[in-house]
Length: 119
Image: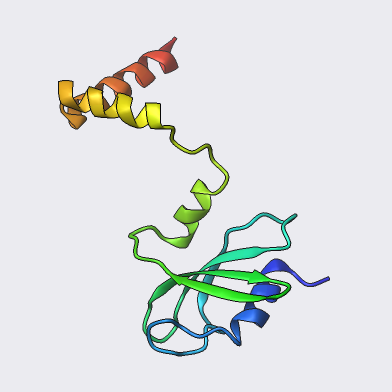
């Protein structure tokens, strides 16, 4: 049975960097999708120009999307599958930021976490 990383690498051989056109066969990759999926998603860094991409590999073909983010592949993986932020949560944050500075809000949250740990 083929491992996820080997399957991704075999398909990256025919996938080209969006920026410099080099093959992504030797790209630095971090698999992102789960094992049960027929669609494989990975974060790839071009070995030649270091451009970052999200690569999607399916039984019917491959796709590549440039990534403009300061997140690394392992950080992308943390956010896959977590609950999305609701509109109400965004509005609540907006209201909270109108009342207080972000650093004060973060300090309050940190103090609450410390209190919970002690209890």
